[in-house]
Image (cartoon, rainbow, N blue to C red; front, side, top):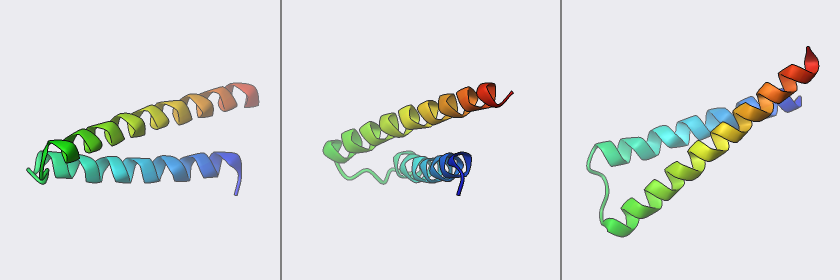
Length: 65
């Protein structure tokens, strides 16, 4: 598995988890404020990781050109 394949695999898993978290938030699946804060923190982390991986891929593409 190349580095690009690995990054794309991780991005796919991030997207799937983000979708799951958003589903809970959008469909009143939150049990209490603590769970809400945990989900929002996870969503923030997932968004950050996604942005960093996209940036890494962009840099890799620039080096390949």
